[in-house]
Image 1 (tube, helix red, strand yellow):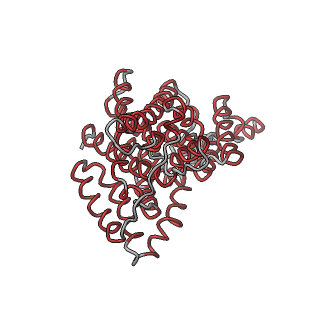
Image 2: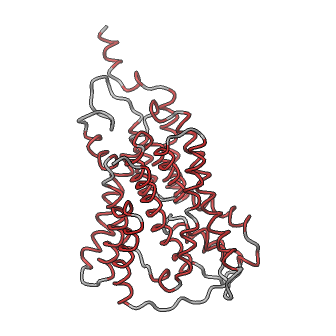
Image 3: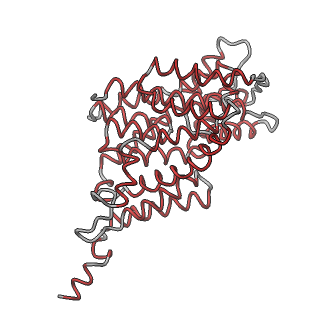
Length: 375
């Protein structure tokens, strides 16, 4: 009996084959980060969190994120209460230069067009039987913005928070794999070789005025986006005002690094196989993939439509940067453009729809929260 009790105290006694599957998934996440450099700052904490979350504790021990009073549960409160995403947005704002968007405002439309993936997936999720709140949370995966997906799902569908968060961050990390084939499919070689006119110089005064005016406009259009965009534009004002460089430096380095560690690890630790590996979770992953693909297509096709009316053509590849995976989507656009023409530098131009996509996905989340939230 003593030997049985001793064995029962080992983690092996509670380990099931589905936990081994999740542990393998965590190892794959870490491997992708280390060997392929796919979003290592996200995938390493998430991957190790997945491993930790699937070592089941002894009955009665408060160890998991779901055990009331455990250390991990307190860390996870930042996810379930929507605390971490606004802090991430503060750091993003402090490191973002909106000059490419301000110098060529029409590229902002590409960031808006990419949000079609969010709303089409919302409709598809409703058709598949998800509640309106759940459908809204699933749809936002198409924005390829992990913090926004976490924030909205914590408000609308906390029961789906784990799979939505993992799906959103997975597709963010896989941007270099998913987007290039879609770009190749929906653009011609001639279109991919279009050169963009050098952007104009944006004055310091414009950079200071923009976050204030942009926040007022966005908050009045979609009050539900105020939490995320308020922090985004506040962080940007810290950067552009030139008198709070110390605060901006803390926001874009120390603060965002700490929050990324806590968010990534706790999200990973929430993927306990017994609650995570369900048919519903797999369906969410599939819908998230569709949402991301449609968002990329929407941005590219809208750029092609714009070219029907523009004298000075824009490179349709820029539409793929409309999803808010900053700056990976812009880098992928740049890489695909260089592959066709080594003298075609698209990075600075791609940052315009890319940062517009961040704003667009936050507004889309705000609209869905305002329409579907139970206040």
